[in-house]
Length: 127
Length: 127
Length: 127
Image 1 (spheres, each protein chain N blue to C red):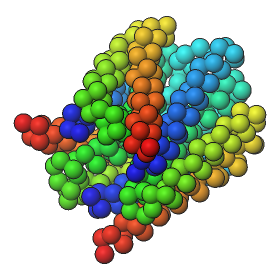
Image 2 (cartoon, rainbow over the protein chains, first blue to last red; image 1 turned 45 degrees about the horizontal axis):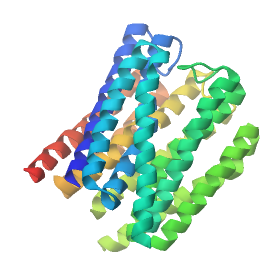
Image 3 (cartoon, each protein chain N blue to C red; image 1 turned 30 degrees about the vertical axis):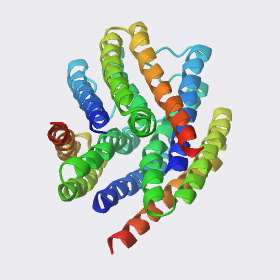
Image 4 (cartoon, one colour; image 1 turned 60 degrees about the vertical axis):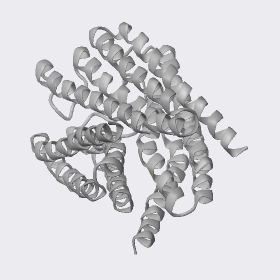
């Protein structure tokens, strides 16, 4: 499972960088904690971070279970696609809300494959 | 642990459906990204999704550890109860904020059993 | 891995207490669901809970993988530091936004050690 765990940690490292970007955007756009709204440019950077959290809660257990019951190699490949999809999402969404679609779409497909594939793998293991 | 993993993936699938409902509610109530506020009907649908995330961070590792150190079967049973509790929560909260109590309460009890039960199981394994 | 799992469950128990404090703050400051804004005192209590969620998504898989591939004992030590850091963060941030730095800093260092240490441990296992 080493390759799968590497992609999980890379996704978490990427997510940490996004948290740092929210902190920098606080200074740049003058949004003081605890506020998380008040400027659309800040809010898009903040949403990149939070939306990645919303997807990591699926990705982390999903890729782990997929690696155990379907394919370790394919889990790692999907993990790499997830990490790249979040870069595409972050770059697009930081520019404009309309440009978040591609990254969001690839992320959603990866997570759906992990869930449905994992359920199929578990079903085969149980039968 | 197959049965436990099935309930984790079912909870993640349910959570994905909630994310889709937030997207649909964006269109229905005219709340454009990156905003997540501005209409209470939209905000309740959004809170269903986010509150489920807030509970999944406990449920996923909690049911996993409970399955390993207490009982795999009871972990799976609690997993099914969690999934049903989130349906009750989603239906109630989408209607009115006052109707979120039952689903929230069952979710909280399941998560507390998973944490406390897991700690007891780990304590016995360590002694 | 028992000691590592104990620290994960303690962190989740701590996080549950924070959720309860958000509920109490709703009553105290008159912020009715689904709203999560409107009073800075409430918002700081709410941000304590949400920021802990934002960090748990790194901590839980991070400490788990660190325990498997680097050191079970050091993973548990870092887990205890994480739990203490979140107490410092909660007490400080509840008082004033400026007092959240120490707890946030220690949390960030722990999570970075878990990610980078885990990647080094996995790299050694793969080579």
